[in-house]
Length: 195
Image (cartoon, rainbow, N blue to C red):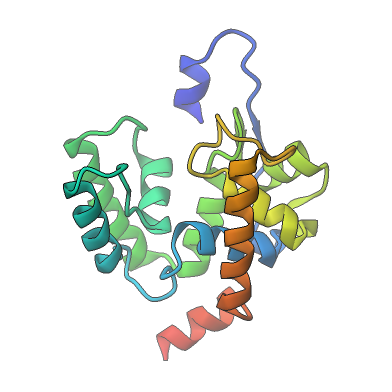
């Protein structure tokens, strides 16, 4: 957020309001997991299968595909700078290891949902909810949550409302993933992991 503000033109409007995880809709929590990192509850910061798939895909010179988990994105957003480099990727791996060691999955998702850019100058679920749908993050519907999650690959270029054809397709795919994921409660998942 600070880097964006410093690098932006005069008049850049930064929107952000921190909310604890229990004041953020389960729908948006599930939507970002289904959109960004479906193995979030299973891995320890790195999704090895996703990394292998991305490597094979990128080796065949198709459209470049990333494999960053929610934990890696959180490490980058909170502790590092946005430009891509091997140095930053190395630091990102270190910070990912640390947050996965010292934070619960609930805390990682809370920080992620409060730090991710969800529109130009719009950071976090609360600001995005108000910006795109004029509701609080706690009251986001499943459709609204899927629309916000659909823009995450490029939140400056895409809009959650009104949606383009591309975002409509991504939103439909996310809604299907949410339906297939089933009931989602982060606390229960976190507690069962520690058993």
